[in-house]
Length: 301
Image (tube, rainbow, N blue to C red):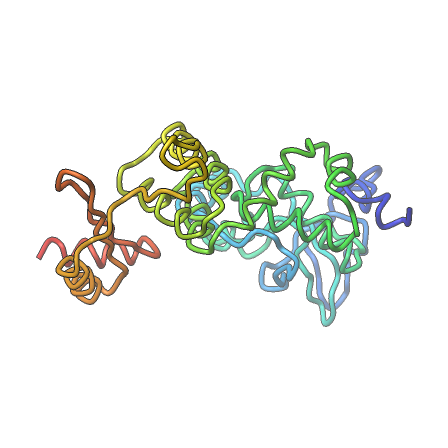
């Protein structure tokens, strides 16, 4: 096994020996006062983003809360950077702290300065975020997939190095088989990991999407979805090998036209869900808080 594989999972400790490190003065680009292996304050304008950052979604409210805390108490835990060119630094970990510090009006931030290859940056960014458990399920799944491909690992090998069960890693990776619409819903916390795990068990993509829309429209619990999935797989006397059952009836042509008109009016995808007995629901999708406010303003008119 090569050295790259052996180091996997050790995170920052594999590349940063903190013994004997003392805080240094503010970084001076021209004098280069901070050598590798030290801690010091670096201008936020000198820090560039990490291209290997697995985290793509940042909760705005959580960032505001962190910014308020930083404004009051400062940055307690330094970020980690590697030296770049022309006095610049590349962020390895701590993107939330950097974003929140800028929001708080800070001009500099405490940072560990380390030597790191591209592979090491990838490893540290992924491992740190996974250990902090602040990624959404899809980001975790993509991080696992990236580590498996980058380090040529099996799921079993990855579970040993990260201290996670193989079944847990397998469950996350299976999420990547879901349709894009459902993955987005999981990213945006519209559905839970439990919902998604149940949906993965459905073989037919169209049925997955139908059940997903029912979860949203009817606020179904994970147990409800598990019961639906169970009913889809159970044979009946009339049909010993049933195909996937419809979870909702097809809407009429009249409703399809109305659905199109509503979508055009709100500038967003609108779905009408028709149920037995004349019941149903109208689902209006939105892509952000701003988009939701726009739709609500139209509804209030």
